Length: 182
Image 1 (cartoon, rainbow, N blue to C red):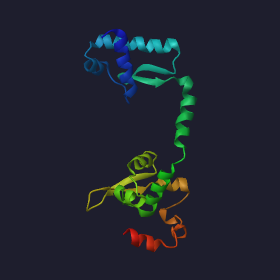
Image 2: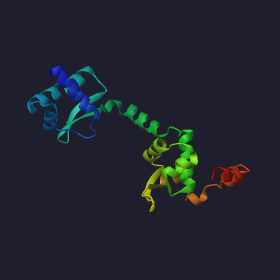
Image 3: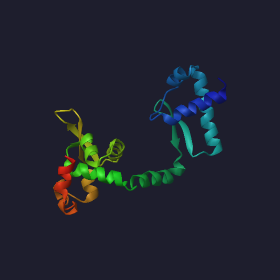
Image 4: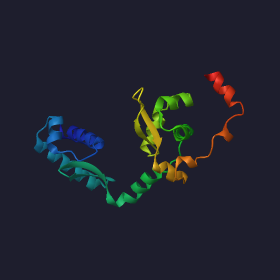
């Protein structure tokens, strides 16, 4: 493996680590001497700096990791914060409504109510902090979900008891529809 290939392999690894990784671990994974790993990491770091890249490879907490350069912090911060204010999709809103009105509720029950698999949407809602696991169903062992305090905060509610009643939004023949589907 020449230096260019080693540098590329190190860059690839640095892109996926979520905490600084040590030279010894990198040397073991790449089957290279620690001294060579250290030298190539120093070279890559110097190249990033010399070229004025928006990222920096640096030593921290006993290892190496990619960081954004401080002079671009305002843009990174704006991107991260804007990403959190992205609107929910229709599927996410429907799933969130089912959780809010039926909690605690399992994924399978939510999927049955919506008529579609909700796994991806559930992950999104958990990631955004709007719903959380709250135990398991005794009969099946399936995880139960409920809304979070962030959900209440975003809706300006003190509790889910303050959610509006569903009855005005249901069709007049809801009993017939439920009987036919049961």
